[in-house]
Image (cartoon, rainbow, N blue to C red; front, top):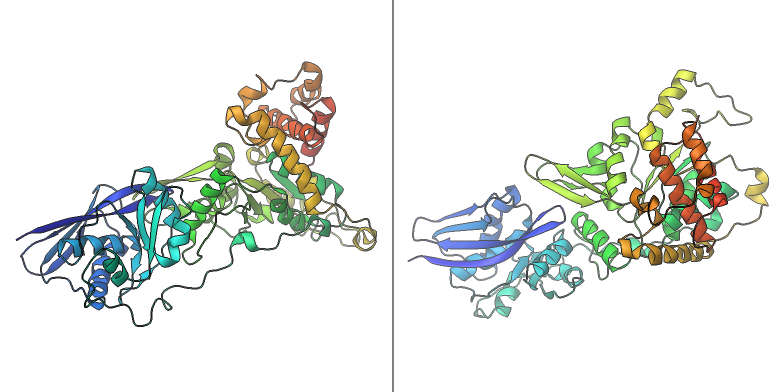
Length: 514
């Protein structure tokens, strides 16, 4: 006699999820356990985890031929989160668990039957609800994160025996793990939102640098900070996220979904509201920065920095190919990674902050130290920052060495809270102006708007025309200067930029590394 049952789970490729039917057929042939439907190694290994977990939960599987099919069969399946769905499908087909209907299962099984948390619960539940399957069963440690999805009906359990009991299975003989889940679930780590925000008042001097960081925060612009070691480039970059407004619901959901794919043990009870900050080491590869890996590609630093800041300290020390790979996501706000197994798309709308020394040794602008770098070494050093990449950077600021007076007795600059108020007010003006175009900030304004509804009169554009005619600005550069000019006007509370605002924007773009 053959028996058949089905359960549901979700296959993730990037942030895109597809509900997967987990079908089970139990035949009368010799005992075996086969998993079909393009499973990866972790999914194929589920058969041993499911068999051991069922036995140790008091519901051993029948010694018959068990065939599990994950459909659609052409979609790659990856991850241990299929464990619970396979177990539920097999136990229903075996008669140990009553039929449950359209329930999505997302949890890994321990050999003793405990349910372990998994990565990617938030995007998986988002996909399930979008396809019309709101009821979701997860490990208890993932329940709070899954419940962040509007419309989801989430149940969290600590072990397979509890799932069976809640499903109406015979309670007699069911066994809970003797040690509970203490050994299965790591304690939650501190969420990024709980970290202390660095204060802009800690930065001594650097008036141009502070103004550039404020402009960047107000309009979502990219920044290049160049100057000698110890001048405050890193301090300025680290304080940029604290000036940015909190993320709205849509952006917070995107950011939390990306971080859900990367974080397995942190139990989130709320969406990430603070813009993220990523600072990879200069030895990072293109895969580390953009995403990649074997099988289904995973997100990289540009996606983890989505709606936040990507800071590349010692930017000329990065491989030139890695830096140039940033050009496409800087324009499109997303990154697509193609592999033989699958192609994944991740959001990557971030603010880029580059920091560079004046030369390889960093002493060319020092007063008491002599720079020994040759012209060839300087050209090779700055050559890592290609023209097309720098053309996408809106603000280029020289950060000079701090004087003793500024460090010890200079006036204290405005703190983060004060500047953040102005930034929020400027962002509010932009949101009001750009909402009907589906844009959030000035950095996202397209060329069609700049030459259409947001076009400025010729007297305002005169300086840009001169700079372009003499070859100092490209067409892209003109557009980026105009976007910064709009931000200058927004910070001053004016409806539109004038010629002085354009001059200010040109000033912040005119700095050179050479």
